[in-house]
Length: 51
Image (tube, rainbow, N blue to C red; front, top):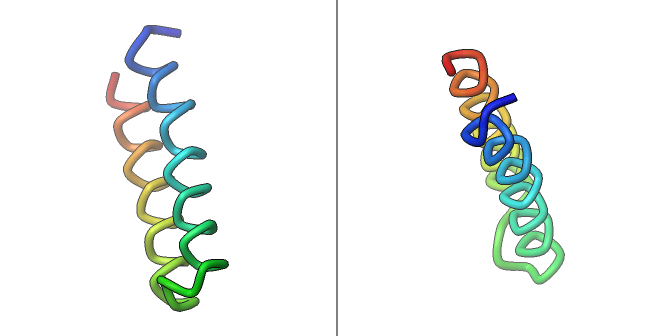
């Protein structure tokens, strides 16, 4: 696993965690949270496989 792939494996859950934290604080609505979490994992998967 390259450094870039390791960074993607670490960054995607961190982004998802921030989105969930913002949802619990009332900043994001449910659909926005799902969009942010889903998009971060999809983008990370595409970039991971492209490395």
